[in-house]
Image 1 (tube, one colour):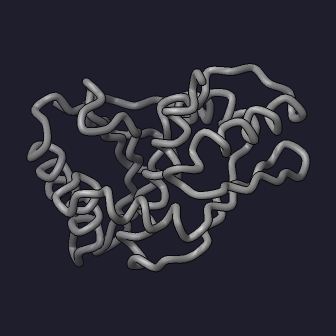
Image 2 (tube, helix red, strand yellow; image 1 turned 180 degrees about the horizontal axis):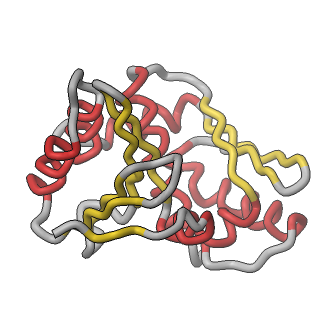
Length: 185
């Protein structure tokens, strides 16, 4: 069962993020994962065929919480179809005081700056990393150094009077190689 907990947590996190942004609906949700990301997430080195079997096993194990997850793939891209029961489960188990709720609230506000974003991180931990990114896509990298309340890497871009973000698992962030990050004091 190794890695299934991390995959399920990631699925729930992504579904919750969508529910924060778009609102909750009891509906089918499709999540797409490249083979390499699934392998990193579950600590495996599976081929495409092996991963299809691993994900079928995951579907059976997670069925009591997420419902009957259907798995399909095209090449190295896998689609996990989460039924409405999965959306309902995520909605019923999440806390409205969760960091991500507050983070999205802040980053979605007009004239959000890096100071506002840092402040929301500091409300949840005093062990945060903030760095200036040296690439064209993002301006800042933030994360919780001890992985609490989560271990995602938040890449933030400031564009005029608004901010955007993308969050990555640590493994995917490292794999994408966004270039040098200069820690801010």
